[in-house]
Amino acid sequence: MADRRLQVFSTVARLLSFTKAADALHMTQPAVTFQIRQLEEHFNTRLFNRTHNRISLTVAGEMVRGYADQIMGLQIEMDDAVSELTGSAGGQLVLGASMTIGQYVVPTLLGQYRAQFPEVALRLFVSNTVGVIHMVEDSEIDLGIVEGPVANKNLEAEVCWEDELVVVTPVGHPLTQVESLKVTQVLDYPFIVREEGSGTREVIATYLSSQGVNFSDLNLTMEFGSPEAIKGAVTAGLGISIMSIATIEKERLLDRLAGVSLDPPIKRPFRIIYQRQKFRFRAIEAFVTFAKTYFLENADEQDPLRLIGLV
Figure 1 (cartoon, rainbow, N blue to C red):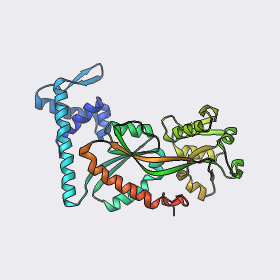
Figure 2 (figure 1 turned 45 degrees about the vertical axis):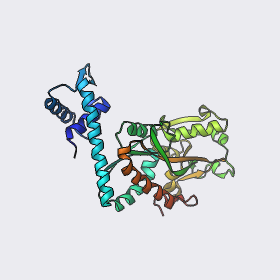
Figure 3 (figure 1 turned 180 degrees about the vertical axis):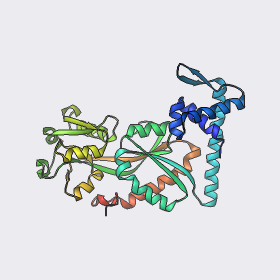
């Protein structure tokens, strides 16, 4: 409902880039430039300084940004208040999820959420943990679900589920015969790892340190940016890895991959993160409540297939 020009202006002012704003708004760059030009014509003054392919806010731009944030904040607060009064939910909810969660956990969650709240328009972006945290920090998404630690104290981070990471090997691998697998036994084999910025990689490094092992002690042979690529490499016999048990359930059912728990096991929490902004809290709280209830009802340590909808 808020003036579209103000929405575009606020995005450009936050990102200080017409190109990034166009991507975030799913608009063309000329369309973004046109909206800004219209707003500058309305106020009869420049809102951005444009020098050497960089932009910055003018004094007038800083003033407009303050009012624009208040206007859009009040609009969201108004929408929430009316929804609370009428008992309905609507609008758009933009989510982000780290790779493991976005590919193997969230789709079923969103399917059930949409069935209960069909009037809410959902959008999902999948990145690694660092990328999702940055999108929440930059207000590009409303909330994220990540598997890595969250250090930003300006973000709320609520635990919604506990995941286990297991050693992933081809079927019949020698490690599948070990009754109490220690991480030091993993060091003897070629190891395939996720890219830097991955929550999974950070959890592995932290676990290794707790066991007196350096990350560099791993026999690193390959690095990939997605769980699917790693699974393909392990299936091909190129090495072993450590991954979320949720990512390999289908391959275990098809007898293509094996997963072996470490002793002690690697556990990590999945967290829902969002900004501590009062005017957005009610809408986000509703989704957080739904998600936590979903995980509570579906997560069964004895049967992880239930969580991802395979049984």
